[in-house]
Structure formats: C-alpha cells, structure tokens
Image (cartoon, rainbow, N blue to C red):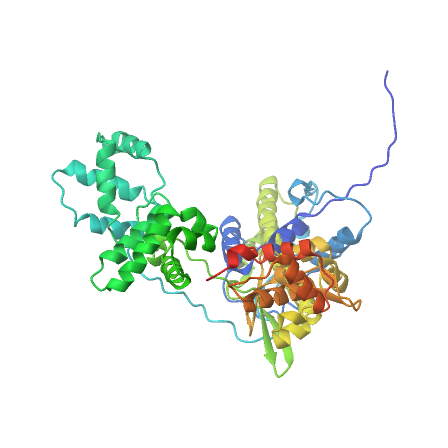
Length: 522
C-alpha cells in the first residue's frame, strides 16, 4: 500500500569554502608552504609572484566571500546540530543554466583585482628574508660502524658479509635487538650465505669493541657492562678508578634489579661497602650512556625545527603581535586566464555562446573560482589566527610581559571563544600544533590553556601555576630524603593551595617526575 507523507527536515551544510578554511586553520606555518604548493600544482589559475600589497586585516573580500563568512558565523552560532566531521558534509555543485549569455560568465572576472593577495605581518613591516638552513654533510651511524669493519681481520669474504649483516641489524639506539635466528635467516635469503650461531656470536663480540662503547649490546645491562669494561682497559685509568669500576661492574652484573629500583641500603649490605664507595660506584654507572648511538650525530634522522606561527614583541611594556608569514608566497589569479576570458568576450561579442565556448568558459570559471576561494580562505585563516592569538595575548598579558609562569591565568577554549565570537572548535583548530615566539622562548599555544584550582582563600588559580610550584619544591628537595606525595600535598596546602594527594600524584606524572623512591640519591 502506497502512502504519501509530508515531513519537515532541517539540515546544516558547509560550503566548500568553509570546509577549506577549517582545514587550513589546522595547518601550522611550518607546513603551510607545502599546502600552498599543492594548490599551485593542482590549479593553473592560481599563480605565485609579485602583486600589489593588500592588508589582510582589511580583508578586501568580494561580496561573495563576505556572504561565505557570514554563512560560517551562522553555522557556528546556529541552533542546528552537526556531527562536526567536515569531510562527511555534502557539497552542492551549482551548474550554469543552458541559456545564459557569455557576459554573465565574464562579469565577475574582467577587472577584478581583489583576488590578489600578499602576505604581511600585522605590523606592516618588511617581508622577512627567505633563509635556508645549512645542512651538515656527515657519515650516518651505520656508515661509521661499517668503516670500522675494515679494521677486522677476515679470512674470506663470507665473514665480511656476516659482520656487515650484524652491523645492519643494529638499530638507531646502538642495540642489536634482533634474534640470532633472524640474522641467520637474513643471511641465507638476502646474501645466500649459510652461517652458524657460533659465527654470529664471534663476530658480534668483535663488533661490540667498536666505537662508541656499548654498541651491539642486546639490552641495557649488557651495554653498561661493555662500557665499564671499555673504561677499565683504557691506559689512562688509574688503579683507584679501576677499583671503583670493578664495584660498578659487579653491581651491573649481579645486582642490576636492585640498582634500577634504587635499593641502596640492600646493595650496601650485600656488597659490604661503605656509603662513599657505593656512591662513587653509582656515580660511575650514571655517567654511562644508555643509548650508545646517541653521541654520534647522524643525518639518518630528520631534524625538526619549530617554526613559530605568531611573534610577540614587548616594546617598552606594550605587546605587539604579528603573524609569521615567512613560508607564505604571494598569490594571485593568473593573468593568462583573465586574458582568455577577455578574448572569449571579444569573439562572442554579445551573441549566445556555443556549447564548446560554454565548456571552455565554465572550465576557466571553475579554476578562477577555486583560486579565489583559496586566496580568500588564506585571508580568513590569517584573520582568524590573528584575532584568536590577540585574545590569548590580552588574556595572559601578565605572563607575556613578565615571563613568570605563576602569573598564567586559568584559561579554557570557551574563554577565548566568548571573546572572539568564534566557535570553540575553531579556537581549538587555531591552538592545535601552533607556536608563539616570545622573548622568553618559543611556546606551544596549547600550553597556555589550563583548568582552574581554588585556593583556600577562594581565589581561582591556574593548574600551571601549581605545577610550577610543585616542580620548584621537588627541585629544591633533599635528594637523600625525597618528599613523598603526601608531604608534597602538605607543603602545597601550607602555601594556600587546596589540593588532594591523588591530584599531586597526577600533576607529578604529567610533569614526568618519578616517585620519591626513584628520586633518591646517595
């Protein structure tokens, strides 16, 4: 049985421009350049080069872009619900009607210079000079080990192959974490060499004498033993130093579990040592390198540099905020595409366009639209980022003028969203993976957000302030008798902070500080 039913449904959709803006907001300055290059390669109507300067704070948007921005505000402040997943939102594609004169296609593009855009800092200063960081050319860690293979005495080529396979199995920390069986299998399948366990152990013992000391060990305990033995065989090691090293070797070989858990009284009894002897032996162990390869500079690991997205300068007590636009090139509409539209207008000269002409004009129109949307999205990105950071700077003004972490105010995303009029999700996108350069160092933006904690006087303070005080207390404690979480709680309570012991433990773990027993020193 067929039924007809009338239903009312309310949907919320984001335009492609809004989706593009949200994605751009999440991109930090460090990789924005790569995103722009991708767009330049995909869209021939978008061009990089010199253009007239255009202050992004004034925005200079076309009427269409202003409507898109208003639509975004309506989306953020509306009463409808959305799942928040931009990628799943439907896009509506508007196709031109069949009977449209070519002038209707050309009106928006003939003399439109608003699409031009040049990145500037907010202060309007000179554009930063493009600088490239020099890259040092050095041997990698594994190349350094392979060079030392040449010092070994091989009777036949298969032995060299075995040694190189062992070196190739050593990881970037300097450890051989692969089983002997796996190395034997690799030799058979990749090198067509059959070897025995005894041969692997023999050549591994040779490689474990390579520089840096401790390389080729199967675990931390073996690495520390190799490093101690290397120290004992050095010619410049005195007799007294060798005695201490022998004690250190005995601790690592026979009492490694007690050492890692810092059961010092038990070690002192079992080894029949006085406290000074145990302390000297422990100090020698602590000088060893738990990651033997870390001392060798290698280009095999990519070096990541922090590129600040914002720059705050303290000018005689007045804070000045600017955006870092070093990675952003000048973008504008390709003039060749404008000229093609003008040529079509001259050719058609008021008549109706043919189907082929409509297809060509539609292609050019879509590319120019896409380029204008992207340039406008970059403009809005700059504006949104600046407004958000400006609100954060004013909210945490005392910190940015003093650098005192104790002066950070409790701040959550909603606080900044209320000031800027943006949605909380937009503020979150801006704060995510962004950095600000201050005179006190480069800081992660998310680190300025924190919950509040109430003092005994009823005043609300930032949890960052409590963590800073907790760090100072632990840093000043007697390491022979480190403070327990209960004692730390009592000391914070005396300073006026109403806090529970489990909260102290949570903050200590967030600060990567060990429990009292593991902080103990002799």
